[in-house]
Image 1: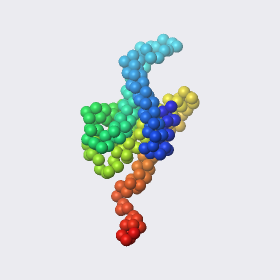
Image 2: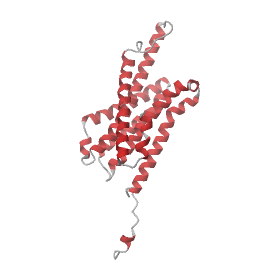
Image 3: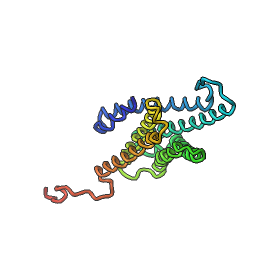
Length: 244
């Protein structure tokens, strides 16, 4: 439902009733996803042998390997959930505090984004250490999203419509996370043959590539629309002829 609802505010009239209502519905759905992801990652980390059944007895080495891999995956799942939460929180709160931007600088907001940055670095380290391309390939996303959030919090507003650009980038960021999870885990269930090919990696990186391009194009469009792209606005006929 979240993945479908994502497109309604994306194409609806910005600030209109449809945009707002569909946007809140999307936020609620993604909140459920984030909460359940944290619960599942916690269960997988604390009780890896209780969240999965086996059709045969495991050796001691197999048990140790399974526990280790389960906890790495649980950490990675929590990282993705935190990344989604950080992007969504920024996207919602920046609207609520647009008249008072310093109100966004709360201990929770700083701690959340700092935790995601640390988790991204951890994902990079573990991915390089274990040769896991998924872990190290997804680490830049967390650095980009939460690093950008921290930069925004520390620098403060730089333009009049700062909150609008931040809202757009953050909400598209949640879409990147949602579609990545859906394609990766959904593809593994719906198209199991792909998991044994190199093409499977496309499901990990495609949403990020498409989403980042969409962020730059969308923000660029609105910067030009609001005349905040550094270019001088073209004078209107009234400006050119004061007598009009």
